[in-house]
Image 1 (tube, rainbow, N blue to C red):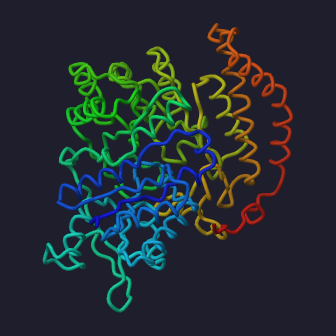
Image 2: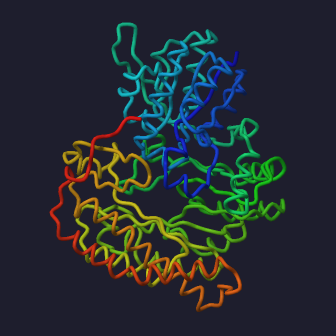
Image 3: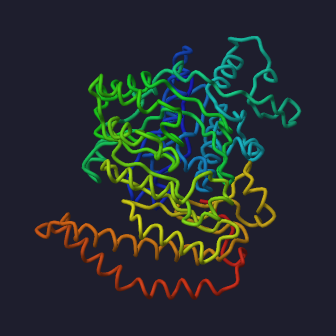
Length: 500
């Protein structure tokens, strides 16, 4: 019998867009929790939903490991877990049911349970950990196994039903500050070779995930922070470099995804990390997320390149300063342009996250964003519409409009959940228009610069796609313009949540 079977509810199979992209990463937050509890003397096992076909694989893992406790510890470094997609919530409910059928107590930790703990308790979850989970889980397990004398009400960060079925909330738990005290994630529980095979088959290289920080101190008013709030804590450059060296020795990745909300925010951190990477001779290509205002600081981009940065994503959001200011983004259009220039000069690829549909956005604002993309032509773009999540100023602003549906089904949903500037169909068509124009321009640029080899079949396929996007773009724009004339009605475009 295993003490704890760890799992999480993000199934790549239930997210069609990400399943097609096939870039799976193990649940890093879950792996941190597993290594933490193993250090406390508990025997642990992992169910990795990322690669599982359905919740029935969880049932099989419950039967195989026969755990004393089932812990659904969501990967809080996965932005899709923070979005609380309905497919994954339903999966968590089903996983809870399967554990309870086997009379196994269920503990859950994650963004959605933190925001909606009554829903999870109603589904049979025994204990919801609100916020950062490791310290709370240590104390909870000590109580449940009789290792400690404290009571449940003395354990900070919990929600549960007491003996008479009353909802009980304990005091919030402060986030841990010294992240170097954490042991490395429990990579030995991961089917590394299966991940490697998938990456090599679909992309020709193998990427693994790491984090250097927890949290974000900025105040973008649409960004939910149910786990760490405004707190931002950083691992030392030496600790991160030591983990990177361990991964190179034991997992042999070709590439790293630093899954931080923001990497390299602390002054001098990225420079010190680059120095440590060079000292240990462990430079590994990586991608990460940053901000335009950070990248224009002197020598930051150069240090990123020295550390191994290959691709940096920027939360550009909009080409309209009016919208950036309304979001409390704290960046300027000029900083976006300057960051793009600096990254290009250092040979670092740039991705732009774009967000449409924020309250007050007009067609003029949208066209300013498209103009910015045309002029800067990043290497990739990610498109979303404004997504109201509990705990944000944006949510409070639009919550009266949230009626039938308050979360997306999956990452490709793009539903306008509130009474926004235009209808859901408009934003889905805008997604199509932006990608058609962007892909065509990127291919034309590559052709002009001689980066497309006409002797390769894939190059002709790319050129064919360019011709197709160019020819169909006018029709796509006409459809977008027609949709812009329709009255906005959130109730016309959103159906009730299906249950698998």
